[in-house]
Length: 463
Ligand code: AMP
Ligand code: ZN
Image (cartoon, rainbow, N blue to C red):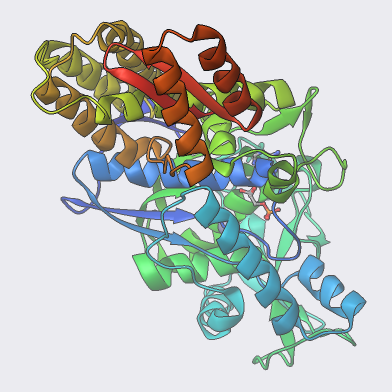
């Protein structure tokens, strides 16, 4: 039974979807105004891991990730570059999708864009005005938080004050806890900004309303899960709950999940602090995006993860071990006799699933796989694994990779020159010309090819 930590109740709960066999999941997606940094990507990767774990647990998953393509940042960016908002955001949306693919993040079920759902947002805003939860001021519409007594139940801001306090208003989309005020649902048009017609004149949506409108549109009034980085608990998710529940009269979200931040030297990785890396930055330094994926999976999602290049280096080494292990298994010759490893695999599988069930403990699940690697490696080195055993372990790795997404790899092939050198080395060894054999080994190493002699003959791998 899968247990997950629910931010709303502040405890681990057994997970059961509303509808048997189907999970509805909404993840707050990117604002497409720039390249995402790997902190953002940690959060998006978590939504992938969550969906993969749910699938492993037998659920069908309808996961939606919105793309914010209209807000202050995107509008400013388009104006700065002198292009339309659509041209500007299309470029960054594409970069975003490329990063997801490089990180092996499986496509969400739907990626709705804010600008394509203005009508649905207006419908919710109009409904809120009609029900007395929102009011107009100079062509903008604000949510009246004093009209919603449960405001603050997710983040824990003090609700008692609501009856007595005049909250004032905020036009900004992002603000701090101290600024809990009536938030903007619809903003009156300003010169130089794109706008859409509304009953209150031209304007554009605020940020929060898009998630409510698109969540209802694709997943219904109540969703099983909703997630986003911890910084979204307030105000974004608090505001989403207020406007959604005031509008529908139904519970908006059953389980709230909030992965913690990626940090750098104690501070949140962020654009504004300048302490960030994009995936491209790390690729330019020679790192495989899968090493980045691995690194981002090394801490439980509810813990902060400190980013360092040394950590990334360790991830690269861990992957090398894992890939090398898989290659060795694939190279066990047909007819090889030895252990079938059924018991070891069963132990690994049981631990793997128990870790997932315990609030999606991905580092624990990875550890189960690496323990199996440690156990089987010495047996492989001594040629004590049967062909069937090797195939069993490979099948388990494949299964685990449906969740982890780090094991599949392409060993590639070597060119003719390298093949010729390897053959020459074999010849030298047959003639007991150890000096020449060692010389060739060094030559190959200089070209990034590591040669190892095993009981079943020499094998190569890339350094
Ligand atoms: P944005 O594109 O700025 O709206 O952010 C997209 C997502 O990235 C949100 O869910 C944020 O909570 C998340 N996020 C921002 N900074 C970090 C960070 N340093 N570590 C993890 N997630 C982050
Ligand atoms: Zn959202």
